[in-house]
Length: 320
Ligand SMILES: [Zn+2]
Image (cartoon, rainbow, N blue to C red; front, side, top):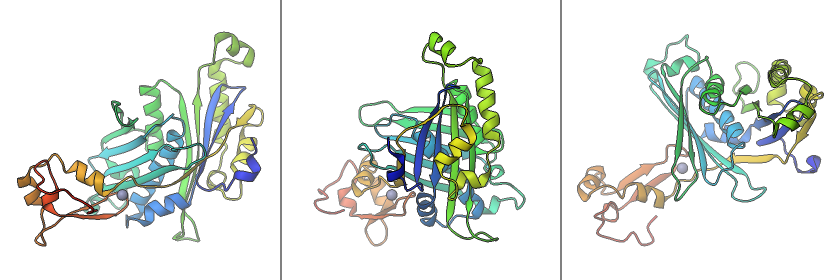
């Protein structure tokens, strides 16, 4: 592949493989997509940090899965931060961007001033949901919140639910002088220890045991600094050479990511189709319409009540 010509390194996920150590990995760089997501809301700084971390994890994990529709992360807690939700839609064509969206639900009156963003979530769980689209059963895996960061929760999730040793190194924050109020940037590395293709291949590929390989690669990743993860001065390929030059790094085509929401008037209409005319009447405003706002992107939808629910009396026609 020809890396040089196609890269704007912002908003990409770069897959790579460490042949010496049977490790597959991803380097993600997000700036515009993260800023776009956060600019659609007016979240407190600590909620923004949780959303940034969740979006970064979503980009890294989403790119490892053959997706026909979407991967979602949902972090639910009993604290002031109640829900962080993200969706990742796989690319619809080779070279097309994957799309990410995110939102959060929280109760600011319950924020302790000294709490870290993660502590604001309280007790709860980290869920990964896989929806491969029409005609398939959605999959959901859960793990309890643990370890003091969303990245630690994701590591626990992969260890428990998928038995794949997984490691994340993430950095994210607002740019600019202190107090940092500039655009958000995020960057991270994900490593996964894959079983060798066959016992014979495993023996010839590496003189070391799998455990030694995994711990060596983790020690190399321990040396990474936040500025290397977020860039933009250090390119992802430079970072991989710096960290893993003795591990036989191979990189694959980068996956661009962008903001994207899948909401539409039709989808809202579908979700309201389970309601009776009486239910719809309850939702109808004094102005005689039913409104819905997309929690992800803020899009506002208005409908005539006669066109909604399973007892709809009128066809919506061209109404949107
Ligand atoms: Zn939307």
